[in-house]
Every structure is written in structure tokens, then in C-alpha cells.
Length: 459
Image (cartoon, rainbow, N blue to C red; front, top):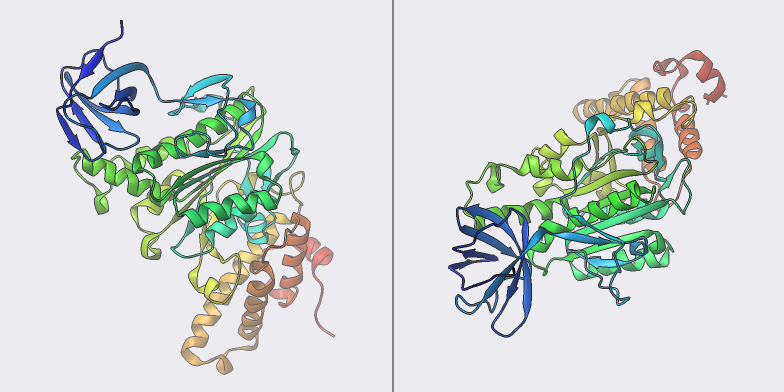
């Protein structure tokens, strides 16, 4: 029996408060019919006895307290899924906006997903080649990993995201079983058009599913976007056995939408006004990455977030760092020097790279080379700090060598522009730069590797 509930008790922002509602479930979808006949959708976000709070996706403008009819659908929000979804452009709620018509679903799936049993998880090992030397060599992205990019307002994280989508390749995967789900949240129209145009011009749109939530779209839609994106990724990975790379930008916009929504519900705020459940909410997104026994597909995540005031201790990057397996940090001073991508090497890391590099994966010298590059670049920072105190002329000859190495490392290794480098090119370039230092300084690699790769600069 279908029941229509007439009338609304209270309207607060995007929320409707209704009384006398029986048999309702949390997260259930509600159809809301206005006086003029238009229908909007909402979901139940709070239940208190027979009083419920409904979050309206399209906003509450023009909704009146009397005459408004609500009908419970008996199901949560579901995403229509089909193999033809690849290559499509959707809005933040998963509805097509590319003019190619509706998606005819093979199935529908709850956007909240189902938790992956830890026992059934497969440990990530194979690496993903992004074509970017700093990432591939020093903070390698592993298939099934979640590796965020910590950026700042106005920095080139959008360009980096496009470059990764354009260049990413998975070892053992081809174009048929590799795809990208790209979710943009709270972006301006020109940025959304930049993403779409870049993917079209580079010819990768045919293997990308784009979800675009614009800055003038309802914030409620923004809270749905990453869940819709991950539901698509899980379908493609675990039912079509594809390897899916999920890029979500900007997670700070998502967290701010969550804060605004929490505030409108009257919840007690936590640090910097964010809800106390921000950690568990982010974890419910990030933990949807991985591989499952019995399925050859995988979901790999690169969430991108902008740190307000470049503060890495801000709640969003802070909690993200706890949940994910490392981070890629972008540096404003490197960007100010004209270097792209401006990856800050020392605070960046990938906790899973140790098991996905080396012989059989990348190259046998990868791990010791990465350790040596980290160690040598750390000494560069020390030498620069010393030079700022006593002057560069007073430095020892070896410190001057490190300054020279640091300059070359940033100009040639970090600063690669739009070049797409293979892992072999990146490793060889690393050895070339290390060869500018005296052999006795390279204490993280053994003599056998030095005999093979070190090229003496002495005449």
C-alpha cells in the first residue's frame, strides 16, 4: 500500500522535518511532490520516533509547509550501473549531463557500498605507472592503494590530476581492462570545462567516467558525489574485473559540505566546526579501495585535497593521513620557482611501495636508489639551512656538491612538465644525478649497484 504524507512541520535550509511517519528506515529515499506537480528527491538523515528529518537533494526552494506530499520509496539511494557508463559525463548525483541520454541499468547498487571483509582482501603489490618521476620512483602508487595528494589553494593539483589520468598505466593491464573514475566536487564551471576538454583532447575520455559537481550545485549533491563515484568503481572492478583508478578532487570541498550539513542538523561541532564523525565518514570512503580474493579487478584511490592556509595539521589532511597509506605533498615554494609538478619529496611517502617495487615489479635497483635519493636530498636541505646562516662561500666542498646536486635534482628530476617518463627513464635519471656526488657519499647502495650504474664525473 502506497501512503502519501501531506504537510511539512518545519523547513531548515535543505532539511524538511516531518511528523507522524511510521515504518521509515535511515538513508531511505523519499519522493517529495510539490503543489505545482514537480517531484524532488530526498533521503532520511535523522529519525526520532515518528519524527524524521529529510535532506532534499535539489534544495527546499518553493516547498510549502502545507500541500507538500511525501512518499517513502522503501529503498536507499541507488546508482544505475551498466558497462556503457564508461565514457559518460555525470553530475554529482550520478545523472547524465553529456546529452547522450539515460543509462539503461544492468543493475542498481546502494551508493553507500558494502564493507569489504578484511579476510577477503588481497595485499596490494603491483605498481601503477603515472609517468611522473617523483611519484613513480620515490612514492610509488600501488594497485589497490589509497594515496592522497595534499595541495594548497591555487596550486597545480588540477593539472597534475589530468596528467595522471592521461598517463596512468597498470602493469599487466591494457586499455580494455583499465579505466578511470574522476569525481570533481565544488569546482567552478571553467575548471569543470578544463577537465572535460583535457580528457577529450588527449583521447582518454573513452575510458573515463566523469562526475562533476559544480560550486553552484546543492551542497547535498556534493556529499553524494564520492559515494556515487566509488559505487561505479566497485561495479567496474569487482563485476567487470577492471582495474579502476579513482581520482576525487577536492575532498576539502566535500568535508566543508559535510560541515554545513551537520551544522544545519544542529549537531555538536568538533575541531574547526567539522562534525565529530568526520574521521569515520572519510574512512567509509577511503576504505572502499583495494582488491578482493576471487576477483581480478582492483580499486585504487587518489583523493586530492587542498589544505586551508597550507596547514597540514588541518582536520581534513590530518585525518586523511591517518586513514590512507601515505601522501604526496605539493610545495608552494617549488611552484613559485616555476617547477612542475611541485612535489615536495621529503614529507611525501607511500607506505606500500616497498612490496610493489624491485625485481619482478620495476627494477632490482629501485629500492636502494630511492633510499639514496631521499638521503641525499635531505642533506641538500641541511646544506641550504647552513648556507643561509654562514653564507654559501663558507661551506665545505662536499656541502657545495650537495647544493649543486639539489639544484639539478629539482630542475631535472622534479621539474618534468608534461613529459611522460617510463620507470626505466626515471631510474636512469636518478642514477645520473647521483653520479654528480662523490661515490663515497652514496652509502645507501652497495658496491655492486654502484659498479653497474654510477658514472664517475672525474676527468
